Each structure stands twice: as structure tokens, then as C-alpha cells.
Length: 293
Image (tube, rainbow, N blue to C red):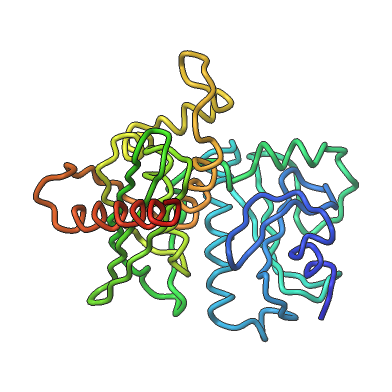
């Protein structure tokens, strides 16, 4: 069925996005009746909660909780009200109403438009390029979140020059390698790409322990450099524009989707998995070198 919400998912109709991941989309309701009124939908069409597959329902409710925590912890709202009423569009969706104390609103009443600039409001409330580590993960069976270990490393021959990145994902006894390279890049970009690509390979929200020998990547989250950069409109305390903004924003999408814990390891030491990642990344550089000679 090609309903209005399906067209929004496809990008055929514009929307004021609050959050998006592989499975769900959250955007402002154009009714503009209560500030921050947000709709959360599964990207896969289903008519209502009754025929929504269990896995898709889990992803929707994870996003509802993620957006709700973002509103109350970072956007100045005191609470949220939730509602499921498929009254206008036959595509399962949840309403999230941010609330402030004594706002005088009754969510069961129809209000006139407030007159908000929804584009500006969406940018203000957006979670995709906002706070990392705010997801409350849920697995497809609505049980405990899966716990995954991700080791990463990046390498560069010349800076800039030929670069390679690699990651090793571990879930229980299962293991998967991810790797790749670029011809004209930097070491920092390869370190970021290793983490991004590793997290993007994880199909559902999980608890992820990321191990990296890059202080550039790890300290950005442990010491909250990223939070400061965002407050300064992606500028450092010295007023210089942050480098690799495109990759930082891409990484923030993943840290919003997963619950990530960061671990700094010593490079080129006795950590076997880190050394494997280093070898894989350097092998990617050699592949590029062979194809250019």
C-alpha cells in the first residue's frame, strides 16, 4: 500500500524529521497543535498495531522510548504522553506529545495550529545529529538487548594518502570482519570509518563495547568533545571548524541507535584483536596500492 506515510519514508513527501534509523522514522505532526507533537512510524507498511510484525513493533517502541527520553532529558520537557490512533492515515503510528508542567493541554482535545516554524523546531529537537548514547536498546524478541563487542582500527600511508579501515564484530561465539579503504584520505577519517561501518553492520539496536586505539575517536565521547562541538555549531573552543563533520554526524546516528561504551586500547601492543584490525586495515592499503601501480 502506498499511503502518505509510505511516501514520506520514500522521500516523495517532505517531513520534519526528529529521528531516523533503518527501521523507523520519527517526524513532527503537521497538525502543529502541541509543541513537539511527533509521530513514530515503522518504515515497513502495516495497517495498525494488530497486524504489525513483532520485530517492527519492537523497533517502533524502541524509537518511541528513545525520542521520549531525548525530549525529557535534553529538550526541556517534563514528560510525554503517548497515543496510538490510526484515525487519518492507515499506517501504524505512535503519537508522542512532549509535555511541560501546567501547560494546560489535554491530549484528547483538538487544538488549533500554534504557528510554529516546523523546520526550525525539527532542527532544535532532532535526535539524529544530537546527543549520543541515549538509546535504550531492545532486541527483536522484546527481551534483553544483544551485547556486541567491536574492535576497530584505521591506517593511512601518507596523511593524506591511501587509507584502510577494519573492524571485528563479536557476538557470543560468532565473529565477523568488516574492512575497506579509500585512495585519498587521512588516518583520523579511517579511524572514524572503522567504527561507523562496524556499527552500521549491526542490524538492530544493541549494547556495543567499542575498542579503539584512537584517542581522537574515543575521547570525543568519553570527554564529550562531541557535545561541546555541537553546542558551538561544530566549532572547537578555538573557534575553528571541526574536521570530518560529515563522519561525526554519521557516527552520531549510530550512537543514538545503539548503547555504546567506549574503550581506549594501546596500539601496536599486545592486544590480539587490535593487532588483527591493524593488519586488516593495512592489507586494504596494499590492495589499493596494487591497483594503482
